[in-house]
Every structure is written in C-alpha cells, then in structure tokens.
Image 1 (tube, rainbow, N blue to C red):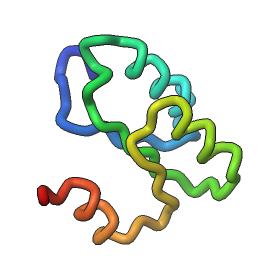
Image 2: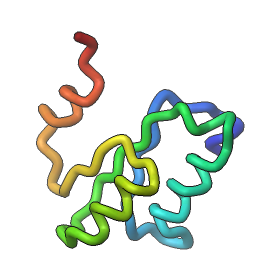
Image 3: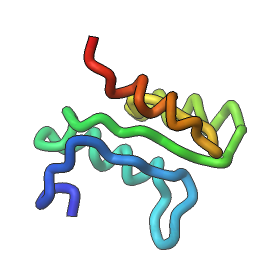
Length: 79
C-alpha cells in the first residue's frame, strides 16, 4: 500500500496487529523508491532500546504517546 500510495509521511507504532512497526520501517528504508519518505514512530513504549533501534533503523523521529500535537507540527514546519 505504501508503494502504491507514496504518502508524504508514514506514522508507525511499534506494536501493530499483524506487523511489527520496526520491521515495516526497515522494509521502507530498504526500498529505494520509499526511503525518502519521513517515518515517525509514535508509540506508548518508553524503552530506550526500542527508541534506539527505531532511530538506528532509519526513523525520522520517535515520539511517545500521548503525543503533543505541537511536536507533530514542529516536525513538519518549514523554516
């Protein structure tokens, strides 16, 4: 679906039904047609290891739930 739709941004949780968000992130980053798309991880997990793994796997940023809407706006504000 991501390949077909080519979204401007992808929001992923780490724990989703039927798919692990970090696995999906790695697939996105491995695809040269998708790797330019910003990927934000939004998760209730506060584990430092999960955050490190997400960022090392190519996440644009890692935000903890509940997310402050101002943090999202800051991510996409143009200077």
